[in-house]
Length: 346
Image 1 (cartoon, helix red, strand yellow):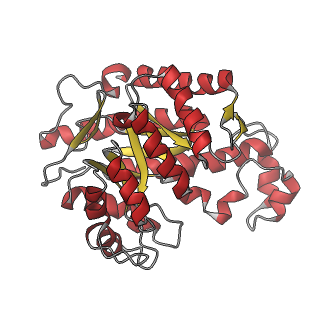
Image 2: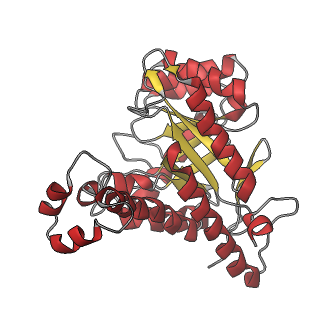
């Protein structure tokens, strides 16, 4: 474990602190909700949801956060402005405090929701996701006029996924014709609480640099840093055969170049048969990829589907306790008044 020489910034989201030296604050988790084909979404254009099931999912996150002292944000995903409005209205009706990320692949939807949260007075809880190399002037102008002051700033460089390439995107630009770095653009957008995202990339395409970039971001800029490292496992073609699918055991074994006989033997007694094997093989790296980031000082882990909260928050509590124990000899400890897993689980 280590201590950064650079002063580390800490952003306050209604009492949830994000950033700092490793060990000073618990890692913040962000759960994705209303993602593509999420079963609780009844109409993804209009934003119609199954409210009882949706509220039960978020209640479970809150319950576990309280139980282990690991805070949660929620990552609201939508592809239309109308859906965004409905989702945010729902969340505001059940939670009057927690910060939420605004996530969409559609620029029009992002711009719409930036205006919407400003109009309804919730911009102080919103984290815009994201400011990246594809941002256009129209989106910059909308953000600048909004009251949003926090955003994910993405260090994604498709031409150069090295640490140097990622740093260049943040500080200098050069991606998709951008002449300015993402941090400069973020400042022009009125972002006062940037959260650096190290841009998780698939195995073989710079995944290791996405982890090393955590150290670089915190050492050079001192800003809260993190990412959606589960995207590495989502993009891992080999691993997809292990995810819960409609494949039969024989199909799975046929696609595996190892020892099908062993798999057949295991299916009789391990984790409920072949489906259990697939789920265990998938979930281990899906959770573990985030713990690597935590070990390197990441402050925000966007761990994907909200349904994964149980294994993720348990593993994160373990990781945060280990980190704190390790850095105490470096003169680092929990900040006064901060809740931490070590206070409840040890």
